[in-house]
Image (cartoon, rainbow, N blue to C red; front, side, top):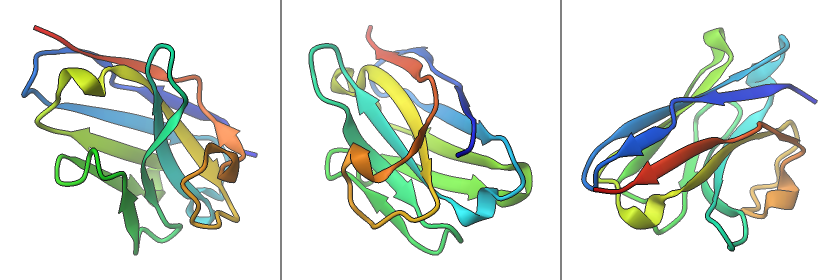
Length: 124
């Protein structure tokens, strides 16, 4: 497993932007698929985006496609989630996840390592 630490959350107005970062410990970051999930109060944790190990492929939930972009910098052991055109319904705790053998499933059970989460609040 790797240790994951998220940052970059905060309060933003509707239509605004935020960039989340997730830094991983260890020297094998490039061997992990990375994902972002979110959990709103009273709701299940849901898939947002994922990046394959070499960043050759990215995947998005329909609800964020065209607004969010996942990217990774393997030299810095960091994965990013650039969020634009934010909506109040994007309000949630956002979690970074990692797995060396990701199956491509969007289920939270497909990722074995998790960060502690960072709050994103979209409100005027």
